[in-house]
Image (cartoon, rainbow, N blue to C red; front, side, top):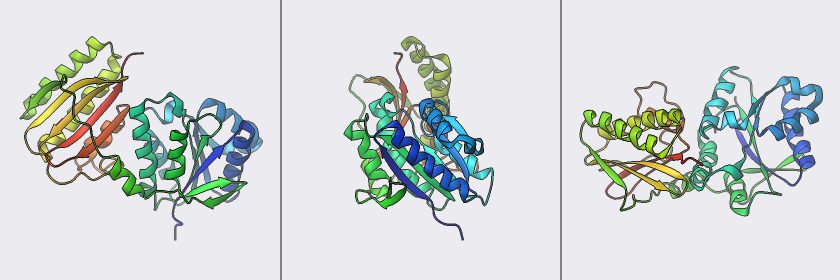
Length: 308
């Protein structure tokens, strides 16, 4: 019988504290025959290399700029790592440079951390998420406090009394703000309108000076979400284009239907034709995705960073 997954946080105060606790976590896993994966900023990878010494050869190291580009890619990296050795438990460290993230990305990261508790509950994975308590502001440390049912302290794990129900958190994060009054709005009533919208997204992205590859990714994400709205939603289907802080937003709205599953598009469906594939793909292409519904509409907001 497979033991359920664990999702533990580490609030570290110094580099030495990090190396001791994270290194101990990896060593414990290796000693039990587990496979080890570390996704972290380069400075943290270097610390662990040094701390583990010869044991580092048994660990897969991935820089956070790869594993979290964009953020939801980390799910795919973890799932593929686990699938490479069926039946073997994985011990995984996952950390990114949160201070570099925009407000929209941080909301999505809070969503990602809570969803892990549901999505990976039956996976043979022990996941440790370190947070730099000496540098991160309290609102970011709250993600650690509310999203993990265990806290690593002194080489062991203690229950976390501030752990919040994951589904309740995801529902709370499903509210989507309406588009601003000055947004550019396109109405889409058929599949032929999808091509028109794609051209509009491409033209606007070029005028804003977005990287052409980023525009390609956004164009594909909008196409997937818009097609999904036309197939499964109800009219009217609208696309709102607008700037919000340091993000450019492509906001797909339809007349709604059934309540939106907070886990929609969080894990890869088995087949591309499966419901939810479009949202999963969109999460792999853009900086942040908000999904929610109200009494009259379903909303999907796709965020990409504006040029710096």
